[in-house]
Length: 98
Image 1 (cartoon, rainbow, N blue to C red):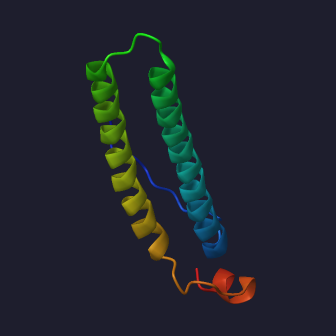
Image 2: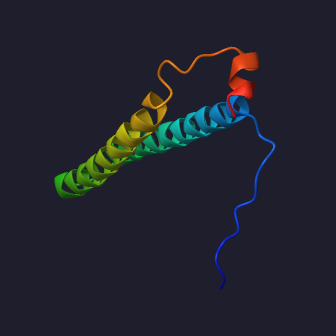
């Protein structure tokens, strides 16, 4: 496998910033789906007729682990997003600043 080749792009600064912010929004959406699935997991386990406390505790531990992982990812996404604080500029000045 050779070295990757990076070529120049015609993408404007404004479009690049927009693309990054949109990718963060998509990642946030994915994380919300994960959290929703974890909530549904708890609901299903609690609704089981013969569920034992041990199973509920194991489920809770699993969900807690996933929530902690999502929280760490949320902090990373917030950090990525904060790079663009105060980066609101009109299209003309943003495009010429490439």
